[in-house]
Amino acid sequence: MENTLKQYDRAVSKCKDIFAKKTKDYGTAWRILRTTSLTDQLFIKASRIRSIEELDEQKIEEAVDSEYIGLINYSAMALIQLNLTENDPFELGEEKATTLYNEQIAIARQLMMDKNHDYGEAWRDMRRSSLTDLILMKLLRVKQIEDNKGKTLISEGLDANYLDIINYAVFALIKIEEGEG
Image (cartoon, rainbow, N blue to C red; front, side, top):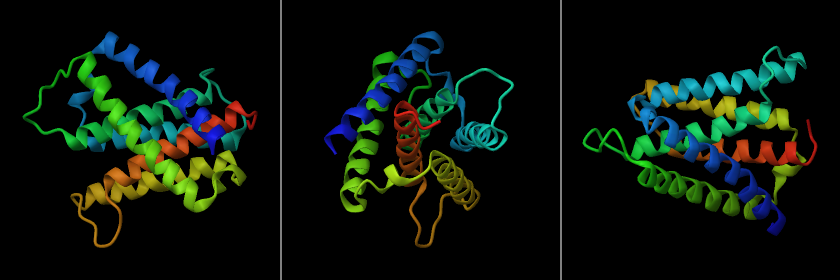
């Protein structure tokens, strides 16, 4: 588990760096997006990954790991949006945005540790393509929950699904780092 935590933190560090740099470049323009729009952006990224996996080729020479990074960052943005109201400022400022981002990543990391304890790091025996499929399934669930105005009868809510997407995407980045194409 100790190695997993180091790998997790290394993967997330790249994501945080990109989030921070884009916040410097663009501010928090993403705040204009409704969570449904963030979900659609996530779906596009996950669909591109699956397409590349199935076709075994790509026309745009942007590495697949950048799509997983995007999945992590957009999921964190969606979680932040879920916790903010229309009364919160549109422009959060670099420090506030980074603090909120770090809070969501910390929640995802703790969830990963808890699940790894219970499941014995079963994700390590999974194919990266299965992680992509799980992300797509979670996104379809999120879309259904959104279509149901956030109401579920017995299922986890939006936040739990976004947290799982973060963790599956981190696992995929770890697998890429370990050489699993």
